[in-house]
Length: 91
Image 1 (spheres, rainbow, N blue to C red):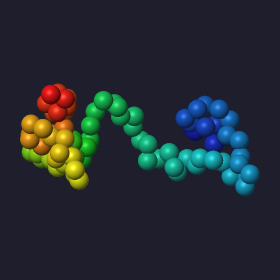
Image 2: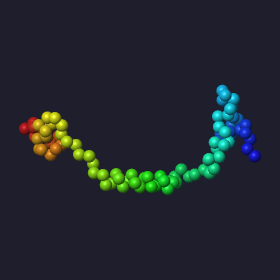
Image 3: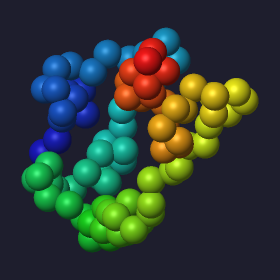
Image 4: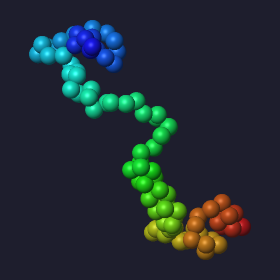
């Protein structure tokens, strides 16, 4: 038998809140019928994970374009500003 004055999760006596009603009710705990292994995934989580991996796998990385006058610094004309560009500009 469940004692309504003892919190079933913490085992401590339930103190009423300011309104005089316990913070948790036993009906709130009815949804928690079993303890699940945290390492297990639900079918919905597994499907979402699989969908995300498929999207991430086949989506090409974004391409960055040079902005403004950055093309002037790009000495080797590869579309990126790297240390190699600065070495070429230093000569």
